[in-house]
Structures are given as structure tokens and as C-alpha cells.
Amino acid sequence: MVSAPPGVILNTVPGCTPPPYRFVPWKFAFGEASVPNVVCYPQSHAHASAVFFTVLILGHTALPAAAQSQQPSRWELYTQSGSGRRPDSGHEVCRPLDYFSGSPLLFDYEHAINSTGPKHVRISTKVTPLGQAEGRRVVQVMQTVNDGEVVMKRLLVQRSEQTYCAIYQLEFSADEVEFSPATLAPVEGQPMLMTRDRNGRHSWNEAYWVFDADGPILLDLRVIDTAIHTLLPPDHEVRWDYDLNMDSMCYQSIVWKTGECNACASGGSVTLKLGIRDHRLVVVNKFYDSKQKTNPAPCSN
Image 1 (tube, rainbow, N blue to C red):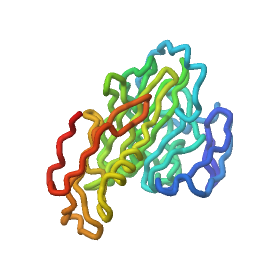
Image 2 (tube, rainbow, N blue to C red):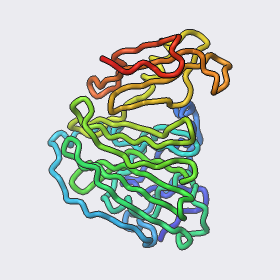
Image 3 (tube, rainbow, N blue to C red):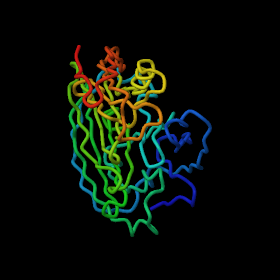
Image 4 (cartoon, one colour):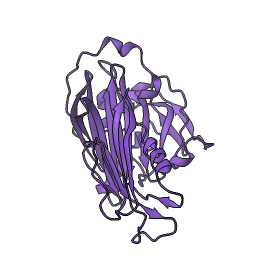
């Protein structure tokens, strides 16, 4: 195995252009951030020492002709981890499928694996096909390291006949997050890739993609925050991720007045009916009830 010097990230992306890693909370994702050193190694050295893993061999599928004109942003890796969540602008990880079942040290961007070397890392890997979207295979890779010390959940989308791109990775310990399988299901007549894992009592690590002929499109959930901000009275707020249900395209939450304790919400409730327009998440209808303090109004058209 080829190992990187301390403080250096092994970049195995073809072309090996140093990506702007920014392991910072979401609200700082577009600000200044430190960039670790990146070192290039030939592709023949990209895989780490052999470890226990299970790989399902998937057949190839024909891709749309429009695949030749890709928008780079749609293939960027998006990660959620203990240091916060943020998009990795310009960072693409696209390789053959079996690469993503290699040593988790290749994907430990948080440096969360506590070991003295690859021989001390116990790994279990499960690869699950989720289906196809716009002619592209979608695959989930779950890796458990050292009996749950670190769990990595990666979502891959086929980019070409031989190449898959990691568009998402969740990296936490099993004690912090309740990991659930991602799903690929029809929503409003089009395929949607959904991942949602409970993090503590009140929050979730979640992300959603729709697809067109050119590949996956990450939905911007900030439209929900904007709608709530414009809907609620001053000094009112929502907390956590109360209830976002993309199967029914609905967001619901009780509302707090500023300064109230978590168990003292008295600001009413808010409901948003969501939709997909031109592959973007939009708010179709919104409702605020200042009196209903326990059960938000059901979503409706």
C-alpha cells in the first residue's frame, strides 16, 4: 500500500487536481477555509492493502447520448460528518465501481479512523444496488470500521460504462447516527434518490437528488429555510429537522418563540407543501397557524 505523509490527503481522482477541501460547518461552507495538502499517486497504487469486503458485480448499462455534455457540479462529492455538512466545490471522485469498496482510509476525509495502520483496521463492506435513474445505475456502499468506530455511507451514480462517481458520503460513528438505507423511488413522476439518517434526538443527516439525462442534481433544501423565514412572525423560529417527508413532499414543524425552552414551544406550527419544478425544489404552498401548537396542519395541494 502507498501511504501519504502525516497531514496529507491521498488524492486518487484521475488528473489529481488538488480539490478545495473545506471540512467546516454548513454556514461556513462558502467562506474562507484551510486547504490540506494533496499528493498524487499513480492509479495502479490507488488501492490500499486487501481487507475483508463483499462486492456485488454489476452489469453495465447503456447511457443516454447526452452523457457526453456533463455539468461538472452535478458530480461533486457532498459529505456530511461530525464537523458539519457542506458541498465540496470542484471535488469529484469518479472511478471503477470496485474502487469504492477499497480501504476506508481512502475515504476518511475526517481522519476519524483511530488506528496505527491498515493492519489494525477491521472492515465490513456491503454494496447494494438501488436501481436505475435515467439509465444510470445507482449504488450504495456501507462500510463499518472497527465494529462501528466509524461508519461510512457512500452513494454512487454511474457516469459512464466503466465509471461511477461518489456524490455523497456520510461519516460518523455508529453511536452518533442511526444509519438507514438510502432509497431510489418515484416522486412526482420522476426518480428521486433519498438519504436520511437520524442524528441524535432532533436532527437528521439528509440529502436528496433528482435526475435528468445528464445525471444527478442535488436539491437545495435552503428554500425551506427561506420560506419559513418569510412566513413566521418576528421572534419566532423552528428548531431541528422536525418532519421533512419527501415521499409526500411536505415539511411540518412546531414553532418556538425566541428564548423558549425546547419543551416550551408556544409559537404555533408551520406547514410547507413542496414540489419539483425544472429539477429544483420549490415551495408550492405554505401555512402558519399561530394557535395550533402540537400537530401541524396536514399537507395539501
